[in-house]
Image (cartoon, rainbow, N blue to C red; front, side):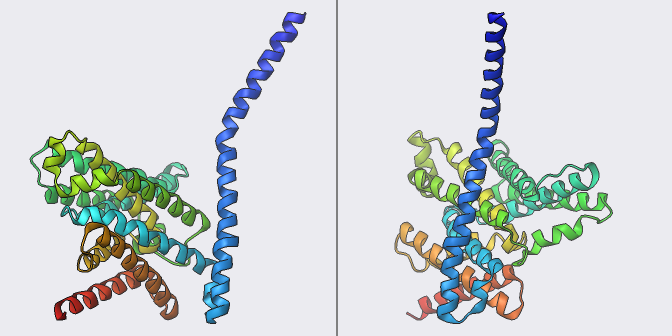
Amino acid sequence: MSGLVALAATDLLAVDFFAADSLAPLLVADAFTGVFDWFLTVVVGGAFSWLAGVTGLDFLGYPYMQRAYLSVLCIGVVGPLVGSFLVYRDLSMVGDTLAHTAFAGVALALFLDATLGLAVPPLLGALVVAVVAALVVQALIEYTDARSDAALAMVLTGGFALGSVLISLTGGGISVGINQYLFGSLATVSRADVGLLVSMGLVVVGSVAVAYRPLVYVTFDETAARASRLHVRAVNTLLSILTAFVVVSAMRIMGVILVAALLVIPVVTASRLGRSFKQSLLYGVLAGELAGVAGVTVAYLYGLAAGGSIVLVALAGFVAVAAGHRLS
């Protein structure tokens, strides 16, 4: 009898252990959500409400505008941060390619929901497909005779073609849901979107900080990096995945069509100002931040598309810097 009791107690402890083990990720996620909600409401909301009172700009106190500003502040950092390594390697079109394949990921998620009832988050679908596309591009360059621009063109057109086919298979029924990802929107940026963007931003910044020296080495002298037995393929894979993270996280504000702009334009602008790569990196982030904040403000004041406004402001900054550089 005592043996049965002991066995039952052991089973009960095992069940409790596995239950606790399975609940641990949920508890961590809940804790993170609670901390982020506090940060978004108390820290960000309090700061913007104070700015609204000081400047008299009431829209700074609106929660959806606070989410939009926080989003572009994150995009303004991670876009030029990753874009600098792409531009200096003549891979500026990587962002555009991954953005168009991310569109296929959104279409796939909405297609699965509409046809099979599988509730796959569109941004998750976009991230998975964009990462796969990044790895495919790298494989095409490394293992075939395809040039980098040809590989990018094939993946870009293939991804967009897949997305259009998936839309047609539903008779266009999912096209309405896709439009917000194609063109971006201020009003539809949710707490979850901002949380995803902040999380990805932390991952991108942390990864670049840890792998900064290998990334710079491969960017400016890949041949020497291979000769010194640096794992160039791993560095290239990391850069591709980080680019996919940036593209997907910025989709809700910028839209698929324009998301690659903040990977390129601030970096090109900064290249005319910085005397070293680190300076260019810093100026690129500043240019991205200015373009993002000014673009969102203009978009709200004049009822314009946020993504388009941000890109036009970034282009205006480039023209101003280029003109000033030429006249000096």
